[in-house]
Amino acid sequence: MDGVDRRTVLRTGLLAGGVGAAAVAATQLASNREATPEEVAPSPPQEPPVTLPFRGPRQSGVIDEPQPFAAFVGLDLPKHATRQTCRRLMRVWTDDIERLMAARGPLTDLEPELAAVPSRLSITVAVGAGFYAAAGLAASRPSWLAPLPAFAVDRLEPDWPQTDLLLQIRADSPVAVAHAQRRLVVGADPLAVQRWVQRGFREPLTATRPGMPFRNLLGQVDGTVQPATHGPDDALIWLGAGEAPAPTGLAGGTSLVIRRIAMNLDSWDEVDRAGRENAIGRRLASGAPLTGRAESDVPDLGATDELGFPVIDPVSHMRRAMPAAPHERILRAPYSYDDAPAPGHRSNSGLVFVSFQADPVRQFVPIQRRLADADLLNIWTTPVSSGVYAVLPGAEAGEDLAAALLG
View (cartoon, rainbow, N blue to C red):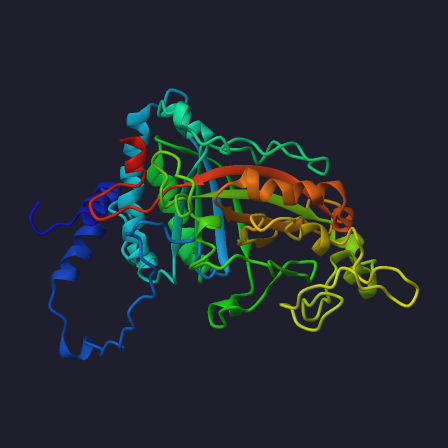
């Protein structure tokens, strides 16, 4: 089929017969006709697309500045999947993701123009315990790759179960996110089937103002205390970066915890500003602790007011979330959601909480246990889903994702 690309063949096949075939023929003839000088318009200068790297020892989407739009897609392998199924899926996704992140459509993309503006697109692939089981690797599964302990505040819903695979898709444009999501889900079929999608957003101005604090829909500055993303805190984030060896096939990867947290904004609206700040332990305007002026100020937990009461409530969110040991730090990358409410309700809003850490049992669980036991924000927030995944290492040149794991 010299001179006829794959897209033309697909289009022709879809429209073959009758008026459709005539339209294709007419379109082909028109495209072959040389344009007259009057029809030739000068092309505006094209700026190079803003892309993030795909190839390398680590995947993008972990320590990058979080983009304002995201989709988290949970997928399951078919019932009788094998290691070969997993290899085939990773080969398909490796090629498709590399193309999408480089501003090119996948081979089967009928709308490649949508891929031409990637808007700092990052696509991060993570796997659950079911992936290990299907690949016959249960014996090498990290001990932390398992459901989190049951917390008293959890009200987990069946619509958001733990899945075998997770795609984190983030970009500065919701179009880039939606297009990449569609192409990867369709491209995976029948090797993996979508179970759920959680979409989220952050303040878009963070794309042009790096470091701008993220505020959740309670108005709270979220994620103030973070480990450094380069240097001495690498061992808190990346597997194999510290003294402990990485689990087999995961050197350069990390773990991802995702929890969907519903917020009761109606009852939150009934709380005055002083009550809100007391529940959080920080000033809403600046994010500073109630004993300080700047967001980065160290809270004075011993400070008392004129009546002798603690300035920072012992069960405020900030106080309960503070690390009790140096290793109890996680890299937070949360997103808000605001979905259509059910009939008779005014909102369906909350937080898609996402964190990265080398060991969720050692780093995340102690924090969450303190929050579950006593946190004033529990009056207005309810976790409704929970999942733990292993973020795969990056793919070096010529490799597929999960190459070191699948052999």
